[in-house]
Length: 436
Ligand SMILES: Cc1ncc(COP(=O)(O)O)c(C=O)c1O
Image (cartoon, rainbow, N blue to C red; front, side, top):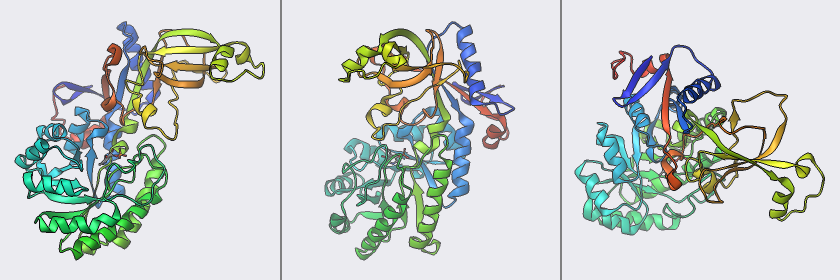
């Protein structure tokens, strides 16, 4: 059955839970029948609904502002808006998009600490008042263009934690400047309503949140001592969202609840908000790519090129490495893996052509463009595939589509949405949305 998320976005509803693999296989069969070789996304909107519900269940007192920079797909925004989420926007365009969905301005936080003047004016005219800052210059800018703004001071965390993107010193006020900055805000008669931080995107140590909360507590005290009455704590993003991370997410929620109870007890009536991006969308999207080219490359030449003399006469050293050319790219949906991947997490594809007894070979997955950095995976073992075969990569919802370009004429992939009917009915019980 087809329904519509918004008028131009259909969603396939299925009455029984199917495996991801089975569903993808059906979409690939459709593509083959239609003679297509374009890559496409498959989005499980039910996954987004379940993630939202999990958040509400595990962190009922933390209000969710979805960081739309992570994936501004209109379907995601609409579903989250309908679920009652709020939004973290980092630019005028993002604010405009969210307000265009009919979201009330008090469900928006403007989280760029260095805002353009025109964007500040836009925010002021459209009643978006909650925003972050981290510097003296920004306070003067806000005083001139949005003096009634409700401000959260973003603090720089002392402790750095390993993660996919840790922001370095780009944002956040260092501890030794906090008091002066608060004092300046007081002199300018600005309204500081709280503190914010971001532990880093894709962090691996759940203790990061406890450490950041301790620092926030001190900043809260300083704000009170300066004469403000802070009542909002923004704990940022950084929550994991890929498959198999739900235990880690649960661990984070336990640490958060325990530390919040201790440092920001309910009787203090501090509103806790968060800005998850990756958590909401990473696992919902799968990209399905097509092999458009293949060649065999002598493994010995590859090793020499990499500065290594082949030592042993393994099968591969004696033979060939399989090079495949895909219709996706690091300039497309794999940029995040190339640029923001200090932990070097490889993109490993899943295949439709399976079979445990199939011999696997050393393979390289090249991207579509004519640029040599465009390599999706430089070393992966796979059974031999052919031109026209399809493969897929899971966990492709976060910082993929939003960073991709059309370099070399790369197409923007279509997104095929589907949802388990029971999940859909939880958001749209009267099935009023769109048409059959
Ligand atoms: C201010 C801010 N909040 C939230 C996020 C979302 O982070 P994540 O996707 O790790 O949850 C980001 C990501 O860059 C950010 O800059």
